[in-house]
Length: 166
Image: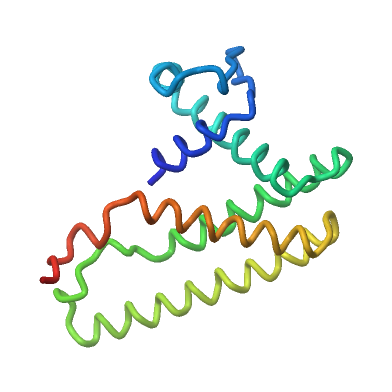
């Protein structure tokens, strides 16, 4: 999933410069981009991904340059917080292999994590509205949903460990 997301951001481009490089991502063909990305260290790749993501969001939301740094800080904090909450739930399991009690506990845990994600989203929506208008916060969440849908279209369906339904 990270590779798909990374490729999506690379393709989106924005002609950004990597930390130690000076590449025109828009003019590169996909093979060249892949070679450059593969030559980067994991830390450089992560930094590049964050830059691409942040610039894509800034461009899409048309964030005022004077608000860019503050918004980027809040946005990155939000994403990290969401990531930490999601890490509390391990979705790599086969429901058919769980006892009733285990399944009930896993279901309850999924509701609790889902509620935490929602509460966190509300909290950060309030924080973001102190920097950008509510309409742009809505647009951000819409864009997040569309990106998630696109990624789900591209990734193989179903849990790897779950038996295939006929």
